[in-house]
Amino acid sequence: MCYAIPGQVVALDGRVATIEYFGERKKAYNEIPSLRVGDFVYAQGGFVIKVLPPQEAQDILAVWKETFFELQEMDLRLSRLAVKSEGVAKKVLRILDKALEERPLTKEELLELLRLETPQEREYLYKVANFLRWKNLGNGACVHGILEISSFCHRNCAYCGLSSHNRDLSRYRMTEEEILAAVHEAVEVYGFQSLVLQSGEDPKRPLDDLVRIIRTIQKHYAVLIFVSFGEVGLEALEKLYEAGARGLLLRFETSNPALYAKLHLGYTLGTRLAHLEKAQEIGYLIATGGLIGLPGQTLEDILNDVLLAKSLSAEMYSFGPFIPHPATPLSHCFPPSPSLVLNTLAIARLVDPKNAKILVTTAFETLDPQAARLGLLAGANSLMLNVTPLSFRSRYTLYPERAHEGETIEEQIAATLSLLRSLGRAPTDLGASTPQG
Image 1 (spheres, one colour):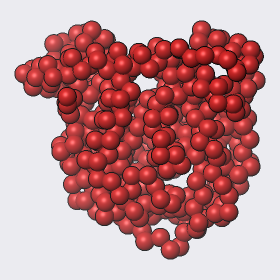
Image 2 (cartoon, one colour; image 1 turned 120 degrees about the horizontal axis):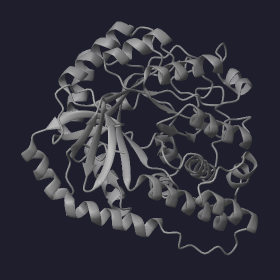
Image 3 (cartoon, one colour; image 1 turned 60 degrees about the horizontal axis):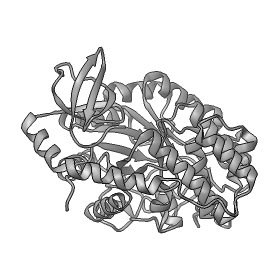
């Protein structure tokens, strides 16, 4: 976990740099040949992305120092397990005690927790998950930007508003100049250090264009790039990595092969998993997960989804609710309860307490306006802000009435910083923004 405040390199061992932040030491891969011990750097997602002039770094650190420790203390207070166990079944307490000891839970034990329904038991589950997040990962909260560069998609996914089922959607494809302008604004104006470039599987965006765009971004901006273009092909993954992409956001949606085939006619789960496995082999940071509450999905399916994400060595777990879109075959179905989504996020933390960056998705924020706060207090530690220009954003309709659809980047950042500070979390991907009073 790397804070978006400068850290100082205290050791170099081949490609691995050890970076110190106010006494805490983290490791990151280095791809900057000139890096030296003593340099101040920004690091994201386990990669060194920029070297800073010493005076600039020290000025930022001077502003952050007091706030850094204040946030840690607040997070510690909110993460304590000072919660009454009345109303919690002894069986549940035994399972959660085992989780607190970080002993692996059986599938039966995890399913018992996933199906919890009483407020007292769910609160205890969330407290345990949040405590494990604090114990292992501290108070960092990753805040990525997402830039949706095209809403064209040739696939027929039964739940997605971008699918070929939606014939009334006014689609768009950002030009290369528009993409680079949006990246410039996100990185240089608002200080994002990690961006997800996302689109549908756009049949008229050549791979060479994507490679050129990523290479241009890497040439001009210090930013960690995730790509999220669907199933681009195994050779394409290699070319995008060579161009400078270092992360892949590709959800498998469900680990149930039969359910996957039903929702994606003509496609197989095996092909999707082959992409994720190839990306891991290449060296990508993997962000993946599934949809919660799909028609025909069981609780065991959801648990298997979480376990699959862990088996894929996911850097980020992305689990959000299914929200029906009126222009798709599943328009008549209903979304899951917010409590099932929270239970899933908490289970993900118990399954991977030491490493997982667990995302509170925009879909969850659409389902429940309090989702960001609730999710962060249930073991999550990652958020995603939309940096797509407003002129395009409303036409990327994965599902209706998306949260933050009409909010400017400034409004999203202000609300996010306010939320994180109220919870004692330090934003890790908002660049050189410094804490205000």
